[in-house]
Image (cartoon, rainbow, N blue to C red; front, top):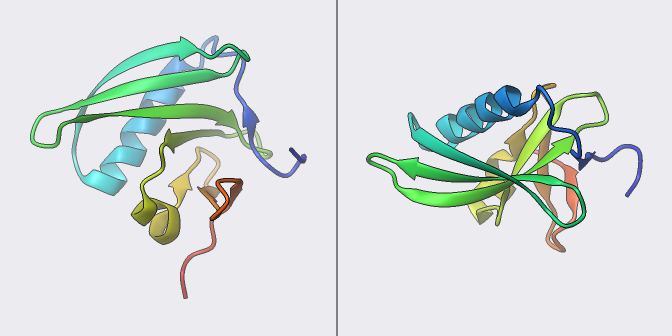
Length: 114
């Protein structure tokens, strides 16, 4: 991993509300208004993840990996990342940057399609 890529978020103290708001904003942008339930948990490597249950008209579950961006923002990357989101919109971070995964599954800055 290089310094210009997000790194796993390992310290969630005082940042859970930011993560909830970010996930709400990401899913509202991609799906429209949604009601969410959050389950924060820590991976074996210390990285924080969030399992989100979407309730209401749209229902389902989605996991997010929480990352710190190089500019000091937070990124909540859905796993797995739906293909349409990967190639058409990317995922917004709190610092305004957008991120996606390349064809090999590596994290990259999002480049809008031309």
